[in-house]
Length: 299
Image (tube, rainbow, N blue to C red; front, side, top):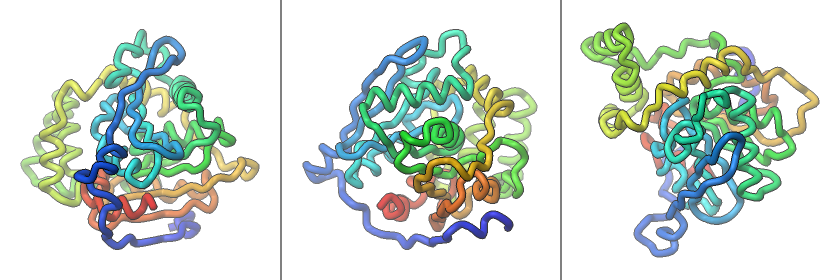
């Protein structure tokens, strides 16, 4: 597996959640407040959950509302930290900041994260990036390493978006023949939202959870006009090997059956010494598939 040999592999046993939402203290810790801050060409939004050292959470997509990670943000808050769930430009409460789309670039997304860090007034932050948000997290950490206390890549894309060393289409094997036919037909017909729902449903270890997630994902939470951001990352995003980069801990967290793990072999050169934590019986959304094990990983 090449560079994967550098990773420390850990299989996490299921554990009880750190807190329950029915206790008053926990309820206070997991309450999330919507806030706005000034950025280039508009105002952006984030959800603030809990108190303590700041953890910036960058959701995936691109173009997907951050609400799908609210339960994860609450999980981070229950671990005794202040979770800052970013709503990227063009999505959710940051929808109006889309403008003419000129800020949908690698440089623009890095600048937005830096503006968020300054808005929450923290010198150094832990950054968690999920899925495509992992690309933004890595780009930011490479551009502003002295502002990063820890980098956590949660079921993340790799340090480039080029062809990965291992396949990333394993999710197709989890589809029934009928679902696979529906997915291919939706893609061929240009119905990207329908295709996305089918792919997300196949991205869970628990089939029932996958169906519920896809059903609850409303059309208004998916913004196809944010696609230029992905296109710019395809052209300009790459994290080179850099031995001189200031060191901070890097942890790769992934559901053990997640298709995106095909990117893992590439992490070694970009982030020497990174640890890999695999979460049993989980896919692309491990905090839903295996909440107790994901909570344990956050410790």
